[in-house]
Image 1 (cartoon, rainbow, N blue to C red):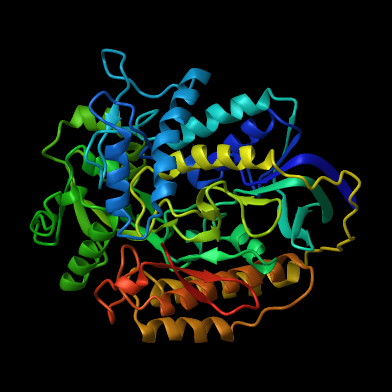
Image 2: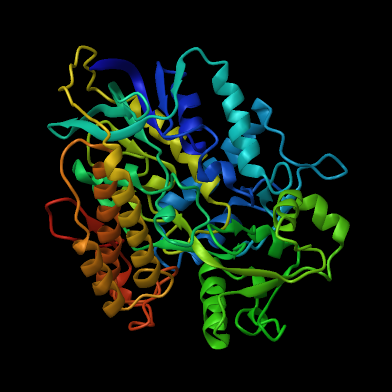
Length: 521
């Protein structure tokens, strides 16, 4: 087995991985792993922007208060304070590096408004293509960095963990049938979230939580796996996955209307369409239930059409392929699985309970988002906690450049592919139907039963390994959701409709250990 050594191994090439790689290259050599391409990540497809208190009328205190309020009592205050204070520094650093955020006619930074924000603080680039612009900007920086070696189309099938110390990971190249051991003094898991395991999702197909599953299977603690955010407004063009309609569209004045053409959010919350996402998503769900439809509508015909086409050029272009002109036609939208709030439990520096293993970005659960993520805080989290993980690694005293990993004979059996796809679709439908936007004890127990009925094989084989991870993630979500017997933020239990004081807590899961409810404070 070929072994590739570096000071840092970073798994995942969304913004968390790319930014961590740039920071890590200041202190050593970096191996950067992408499961597919550098452009295949939630970061790349992020439309709204990145939130930071950089405008004259804003402050980090305001940003902190909005984040805490939106998190429904489950945010860790110190994590949020770090996010907003250091986030401002990271944005200023990006701008100094040359990141071209959009500006107004007076050449000052343009800032948008999104749900849950009390100030216009969402910076964007390329109109509604912020994620793509930031990822491409970081790619250009990394491309010229000789300390960073990028490997694309590598499937990480296991971590290298011995005596609770992570020493890297095992990778596999499916087309070549070749296995590689990537050894490193520091491993940063930035492999993203799991929302693509749901039948209706805004995520690219690669976002299936395998990084979270691998960490769990190797002894890492997970926290709050029941907390999955559903984006309120996803356009579904007939069959297939949806197309996210940025919250910034509502920020610029779009209205949500029901089947009768009536605005419904104004009667539910003073912020109307700009209420926090959890409230907007469940309100849409209730309207769909009331009218027995699979969508509500976004209405933009009262807004300046030229301004809409310019600000949301990508959305306008993509939706027009379905024969809809968003400047004058009603746009059908519905909630879809969007963002993984729970994940690998970390401290304030991205450290997990496994030595030398760090987790950042959507794969991590550090207490920033609580029970409901404030819009556009996710890209900021990538910058802030990616930087902190690298800084924490400088205190790592475990270095073994001569470490030799055990041989692993991984393979791919193409005859298993059809069965894999059938079972994967079954997992998607089970999660969507029974562990979706609204849950009950009955539906969650059914999810557990259905998932346990899915047979998985052992051994080091590509399709078998992926299916095991998918099933494990589904069971982790359902098990955690069963234990949180309350409604809080994005976790909506129809049989427990109220928040409970005793559930201001993290639900922590670790392999071969009893699930725990740990008070937050």
